[in-house]
Image (tube, rainbow, N blue to C red; front, side, top):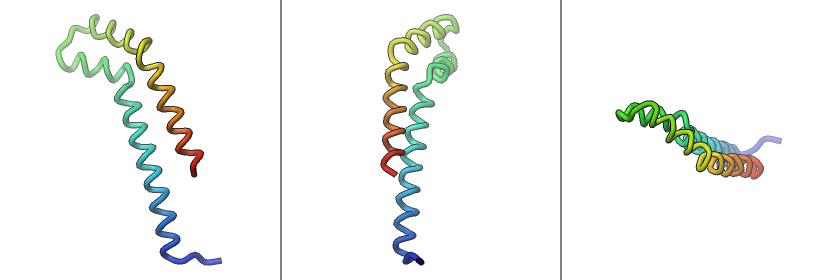
Length: 81
């Protein structure tokens, strides 16, 4: 059965919206990555050993929780499809 062009347009818009949402979440996940944080600290002129220590503590105390939260949000958005 053929779908109307409006129905097809709605389906495409819905898929594009969800892929944009996932792209946004993956972008956030990249930005909060401890390696990314370390690189930005060094790029801003911070001492490498100090940046490494900050990144390690950040990974242990913050990133592990945030990453699980983002993974759950990504999986929940995929289940809604």
